[in-house]
Amino acid sequence: MKKYFPTILALVLCVCISTNFARQSKVITIDKKTEKAAVTAPKEIISAQQTFAIIKPDAVEAKNTGKIIDMILQDGFEIKKMEKIQFTADQAKTFYAEHKGKPFFDGLVEFMTSGPVIIMVLEKENAIKDWRKLIGATNPAKADKGTIRQLFGTKIPKNAAHGSDAPESAKREIDLLFFR
Ligand code: IDP
Ligand code: MG
Image (cartoon, rainbow, N blue to C red; front, side, top):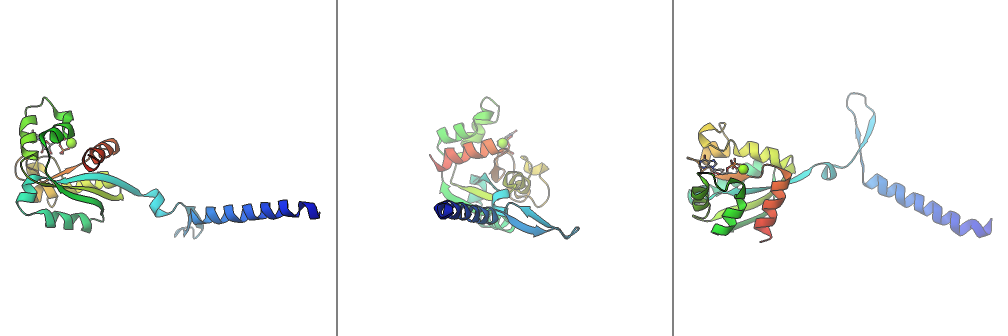
């Protein structure tokens, strides 16, 4: 029996450590309807999603940066990164490569390089969808009341803000502008 003691001790230790690890990586919540305990992953594991945002040159020029940042914070986003930059023509062309060849492409590049912009990485549950909702439709004239583009945009391409449309584009845009 004595010679098995170290093995037994090691096994008991392993079980204790792994049980504790499992406990730490989960949270227990009480289901209000059934009053039964439910084990779920903690919020930070379930939720955080990042998106890429721009306060465009028209909104920076019109001194709407503070109001837009306030709307971002009031909507529950965390600003993970923020920088004031000015797009080069090459950056603007690469950023909007999907629109190359369209009639508004040259005007869009000219607009995006016309003055400083604020670039941001925003984080929140459903950040991509929620940020697109908060900025509103591409055309400010068609954007819902109270959205950033309705409040601060004028006439396309001058629509005050940009938001990534999918996780792949968020990653591409963050890499392109924060790791340039
Ligand atoms: P989005 O910014 O809502 O994703 P996109 O169709 O990806 O819209 O277009 C990128 C940007 O190009 C728009 O935000 C706007 O500034 C500009 N834009 C889009 N369509 C037009 C247009 O028909 N005329 C002028 N500018 C446009
Ligand atoms: Mg787009």
